[in-house]
Length: 119
Image (cartoon, rainbow, N blue to C red):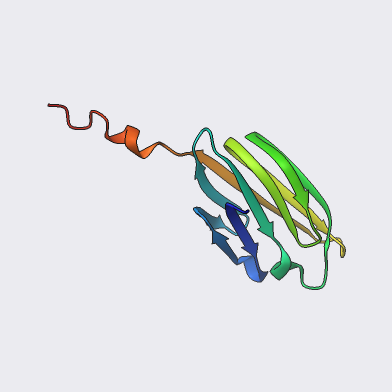
């Protein structure tokens, strides 16, 4: 099951599912708790046209990527921690597409209200 999904289209457009937002054409941002291990899928179908994914590269800083896999149209990874992951594909027509997902720390809602209004 996908926790968060990015569906890429032409002209820098994207659709995001889950608490993830597009900052620019190739930059996305989301929040995770320290103990979260969430599945992210990036679907390139709308951008690829008749081409397919030939190769995938991932580079991380502060984020742990596990369970990584890809099909001819999408890539999947389970991510934990905070930082960023750079994703790069090369297509069957030798086009390249790169994007970055920045993962920021999410504070626990209940912790923010403790001692907020002391007696």
